[in-house]
Length: 365
Image 1 (cartoon, helix red, strand yellow):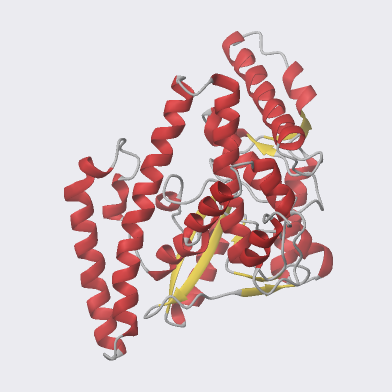
Image 2 (spheres, helix red, strand yellow):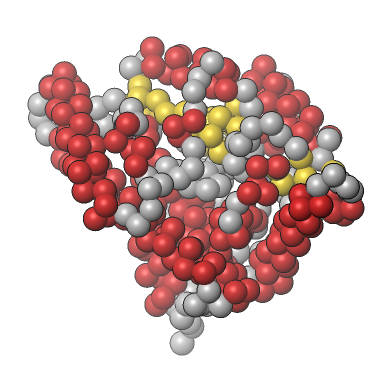
């Protein structure tokens, strides 16, 4: 059994993976795809429409019944905002609900070389190369981790709370989402609805970075529109984003230090020894300076994590280019619907999707 508790929110993006197990299951018949596909289909088979969830009566707990109706209302409002105001693809995603007995959907495995940030990838039909592999059973993810570790790779296993099947199925809501604050629920749903709107094959870095930006910015606009820029809800979002930016900035410093080491001419053994010292020193500084860096206690666990290249590379995957997307957004007028519309014009043949997005946002003279 692999313990993935340490890899859950807040240490990784809210909707961290486009696992695409259902898509894979449709086109090949290997043991992995059949096992994961049947599990997903089982979840989908017991999903109930939100209308039914909303009308379920719980006379013994009126407070729970009211909270259920509020959750349904929040989801509907976020979906309307995402599709009608932001221009994301109309779909029946997040109109059904699945009860689970855990607080994550799947365990996802990522890997990288131990002495560099060379990313390990898996190839799947239809979607191409992907930098992670998902499992609905944590013990299966543990077996994959052991197999990769035997090859000398750094491996990280994390829980993800959502993924997009890119329109092949109606992606459902899961019971643990009921407890999410509004900004986190909006971020998650907008992020995944964007994946179902824009997806470029073999461009996982671009797909994830852009979805992260759109999810974050979309959630901010939603909270501002719904509650106002001076509301407690908006302040909670602002504080959460500030802590997230501070955490990413700290990790970038650590990544840069390791990249310099990996480019050096020292032996692999020396690189691994210095790597361990650099990570340990970074974790000590993190703990010492925590109160000056963060507003909440959400990130204290970093100093206890078994940090390795696979963990750090996830932040290179999801956030390496976030300043590019933010800068482009502001230069193009800060209009998220227009930004999304430009992204929808891209296709998988783009050699440089960032450059293509910038061109699509540049007014023609």
